[in-house]
Length: 421
Image (cartoon, rainbow, N blue to C red; front, side, top):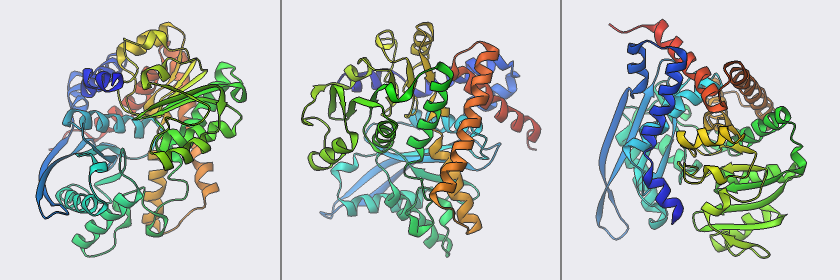
């Protein structure tokens, strides 16, 4: 309940614009360029009917936002969640612009969402909703225009339905219209693990900079979904103690650590991490403040705020989620000597391997998982190094440094392109 209250108290779009304003001020951007980059290029709102299993018709609301396309087509996930708002989608689209820029891939930022709790729908109803939403989005999406991907409560099956629907409309199979697809439909090896794998690569780089011995670390993960669960498993494989994990139902803690793979098996059977033998139950809020060395927020936005930032014990915070820390909390963490790997860098592994998938689809040439991970490692290391260099040169926190790198790249592209006509 505490987590939900915190989420509702903070407007993600306000946070995103505050973060941009800070970077724009540092970079001395012109007022005209600030106006262009501060707002989305396009916002689409749709209200669409879906026939339910009982024969009734429900109308759902969905959004697709394209923030900036100066560096390439829009790229960003589609989420299904009962708390989706247009402001949230706008913020996520803006963050995608900076995320693509900070790792140097040629995409702009986009995001989509539908206000729905998919857990209350049957599989057939989710498919009907997805295909109708894809049809509504067909005026925007396309391999060279806007390429969706999975996000909260969507997956490779969702992307398969979108790809198939789009392909039926255009009259030919178009695998590059989405990423995060199943392997048989042109998906990339390593895509499912990419967000977590990229986060772990940045954690290793940060630990090297900080002089932290990773195998001796105690790790807490908020959000035991795809990214969080895989990140926990990867950190466990490096020798870390996983002392706490949580999902939407609550969390578990054990000072001696536990095997996250066993917790994942428990969750699949019981639909919750809570109750895993040998652990004590904690709340999502308590997890953030627990005794650990590395904290991985991998849930929703605005979890670390001015209310709890001063009680965070982890020395290293790796944002596998989008927007988990508010600007006010950033200041507190920086003051307290905490090292934050910001979301636009930390969780950019997902969009990076999405880019790899897009390239493979366009070229009809597919790579094995070793090639994918080697390329991902190079991209993440280079992005971390450029961000850390900016951080040290400008004497700012890592989030501001990442924004300085990303916003400058987008501003340069927008400036060179000019204003049409």
